[in-house]
Length: 299
Ligand code: NAD
Image 1 (cartoon, rainbow, N blue to C red):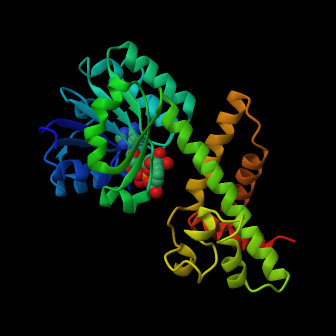
Image 2 (cartoon, helix red, strand yellow):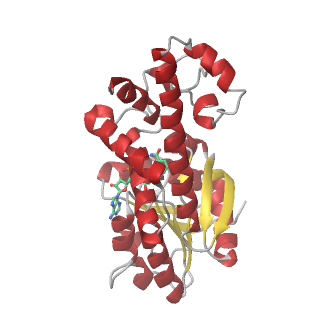
């Protein structure tokens, strides 16, 4: 347990709210700011302190954590004359846990480091349930020194902390993993759809593939048909879980990164297209495994 520190927390939504609450529970003073007054009220009810702006939340603090929707929000909070890179005390540790594009992540980290700050990108997996339970996985990019400074705080909010490499490596790991997940979920769904058309009992396909070369996490931990894996969202009317809209966001980030880095990811591109179509046919708020309904509807 670290000595009590003062932490600014910006972005108190579905993820940031419970993450900030865990820092409060661990004995830290947490100055919270969000554009939503309700989110700030919930933070105060959990024992946190309200800040009236991002700048106030980040002034005279040891650490700032941001948990924001996208790269443009992260850039606007950190960069520019009024941004935290210019206004926070030199030496402040910045932890950005938002899932954003690699280029924004690297740009912000470069400016922060040049201004004498420490910064890590530390996107998460584990969803709102993991955020509340303090069991998130953090994929971290940044220097060894910044990683060492961030670890005690990440340990409070998560249970698996992996140093992926330099600035931006956390975001890179997150989008590579989620691109693989999107592709493997579609592949798993297609196998069940084909089995249904061929008159093969889906339970038999599960029994065989779960111990054969087709085995993957989408099949054995998150099976997209009801039955074989009782905890999967398929058994709960495809309530998320991990919403299709979030999967689409990550697949689009992976495509942006493919374009800017020159990597060929044709399956990732197709997965992004299919999740886009699924989201536009009312699938946005459905768990991402619900894409099986969309695939069944295709001719
Ligand atoms: P959310 O929309 O619930 O929360 C984002 C919060 O940021 C909102 O409360 C919003 O008011 C606030 N915000 C936006 N701009 C702001 C600004 N300029 N200043 C202060 N506050 C501002 O989103 P979430 O589900 O908490 O996700 C946050 C991040 O975590 C996203 O990047 C998302 O991709 C990532 N993520 C989410 C999940 C999940 O399951 N929800 C899982 C892994 C990663």
